[in-house]
Length: 251
Image 1 (tube, rainbow, N blue to C red):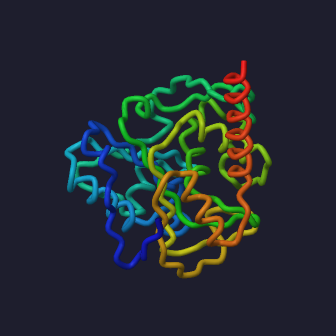
Image 2 (tube, rainbow, N blue to C red):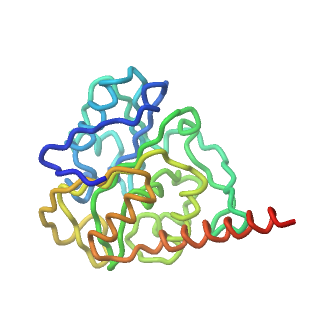
């Protein structure tokens, strides 16, 4: 669904009422304001919506893309939400999670922060970005959950500073490995860049997309008139899974 940003009120899914822990993954890898990062207004609206129906613990989780600490980034972005735990991916204990795809695009087993596995509802909130002509939305935002200590060689790729085809492969793998419940594309403003996901041309956009991560990324891609590589890979994997299920049923 698409909402006007000016009067956006987050209506949480019913499942949140039964959750003990809700994890929010914003895009807050640097201290640049929205749309380089997820706006404080949208994160605040989501937290307020959760609080209307639930007393669950709310956790924000992100990894810094540079030398800034997450503590300083959270402070600079105004992420001072009451009764909310702000965590740094690189200060969490990493645990291995197996990729369920029979043929992974890039990584068969991911190291991710252990706190994710203790959460009952997972939300990814990404700004509206078009980088190098492709969408950079809620599923790609999951790359920020990978700890630097386990992915030292991939850090330049994961930061987005150096364009690389493996970014789409890893994003598609993460979509299946960490099935997030809800995706939000925060399009209060739109950023268009040739290479740097934190800097580029900024314009007012005024819309917020809410739904499953796959659906909102498809809708945002269509609205932005762009192709999004990891969505094509996800479609391929789903089609292959469907063919495999059909073959099993015929035996």
